[in-house]
Image (cartoon, rainbow, N blue to C red; front, side, top):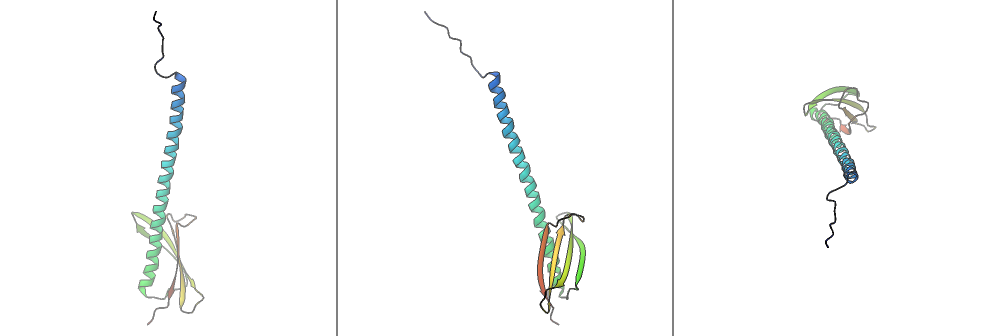
Length: 127
């Protein structure tokens, strides 16, 4: 006498729903991680470009071999198909014949915080 045993093949509906829920949570975490990585990459790119703009501004002052006047100056420069807004503050360094240059660079003119801030000292040019 042979007994016939009915075995179920496959998954129950509850098992499938649990698996889909786990998969949805995992995919949401992956998507959030990729979005955060993209935002961080864009921020670091902007900071790098802003730093280059600040370095260019200080290099221009140094190359001109002119004694920079005390005070502030603002302007903009295009780099990487974007206009960057800089502010140059020239002050006395407390050492005779030396001026302090501080450059801050923003992505937009009215940004509350600068992406790059660079300080340099320049000496009085020799005649």
